[in-house]
Image (cartoon, helix red, strand yellow):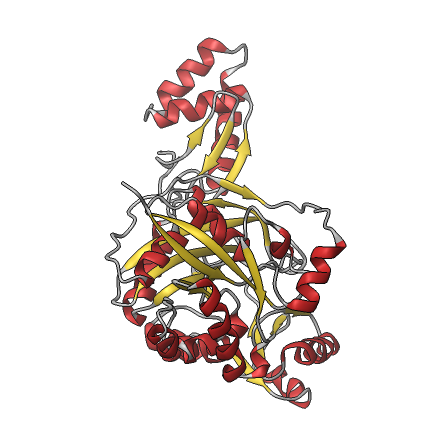
Length: 348
Length: 84
């Protein structure tokens, strides 16, 4: 039977020390059994490597930064859609998700499908709101507080013991062992990601992640837990292994059923010395290591596209345990003309 | 005393705990002991096998065996509720 060919736009083509999930998502899509794809890359900067990976991305368009507003984004998407006839968009950056969620109905009317969390889900799970989230859904979360100025750091002594984690609104986190470090990380991270800064009690333990997919009705369509084996100084997994931890699966199913989560997600967990899992963060999108889930038999990007297209998707019930991913960097040789093209015309 | 059921051990002595993703290397005698524990052999049976195969006195074998079991417990490879 001939497979349907979808045109799918994917962002997150960057691969710096905090790599975007785009290329990993595309690898999953290209390996999908249920459809063929033409991949449109969405980029923000001219040096995102995915732009130049022509066997991964068929054509790339630059799109405006979220700060330009949804009108500018919509105008650009309308232009791209006119040429490419997009079936699905998969945004992969936390910082851009809000704009796409705002535009979901408008894009749907244009024939472009997405499968994103609702704005309520997106806000509720935000690291700023994590303590309330934990209370509401009865999930262990470390104590945390949002602060707006360095002067507030001095009063934290009453509520926190060092070390504490200083976290940016969207990305970045550093462990502070004293007030001076806390202040310095506050300034550094707030300059990059704005306010508030989230101060979270540091939990000693081992880091685990789960990536999964919720159908928006409370069903867990996919869930693959992973233990980080090799961690960069940014805290990113550069190697990991799929594991068979029933408690993590139960926690994931609880999260999905209670929030009726819609879309891909990643739960960042810490197993403390008391052997309990603490939820450190909920990322409202697929993680950069999503291809491990594909490699373990759960093609989450494929399932997400089918859900976006309104198909019924049966939940995955199993995955390969003990399968690893090891990330590597690869220097591509790129002609200056290609750089010139994307830099000046915003298309390649 | 039971070793956790899911533990995988290769012929070369590579031990993988799929519950938490930890892996270890054990020497051939360690691998042999884990294999015997996986088939739910009792301490007495394991002890008897080791005495008959290796040229060491009973006290040494007993001490080394319990040291090894202690390590397995420490690394969550044995159900900690089980008595050695």
